[in-house]
Length: 210
Image (cartoon, rainbow, N blue to C red; front, top):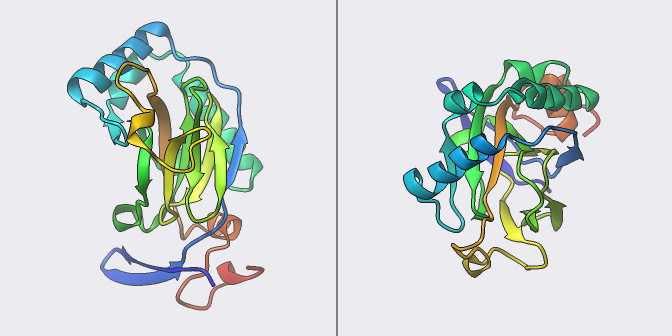
């Protein structure tokens, strides 16, 4: 039986199932320019002081000013989400730019319980996997990897070949930072709920075929 999540929607509390469905694929996106990658590395090392296992926000507005291919990356993700049945949902969802040096096991349901995430990874393959702890699913991370998953589903970013997150796999002298765009997709969108097979607390057509 699926786990149940309780989350706030406006002034009301709702409950729903936690989805075991992870949708992932690969899209073609251009490499970020060297100047922008250097800016990200400076931000990670000097301002964020990113430690092994940390996931933090990068300044998106500043990146966009130096990133001529930003719109191509967004369009590639939008086209992919349309191909899995989400129409133009991505274009109406909040977006952020993130960086991680691995990621310790966690879920994001406490803050984002009313959402699923769509992540588009922008860094080259550095021998890291996105690991869904309770599902036994590992997704190799490379530029163009795109993933949709329930925010309540526990996940981590680990060294390929490691059974679980280990901070010693992320020494400071190696560049193991992954940069990615992430969108907050409203879980009560009918197309998304059907895709992830989420069941809600009240009878609804969204529950059909799950």
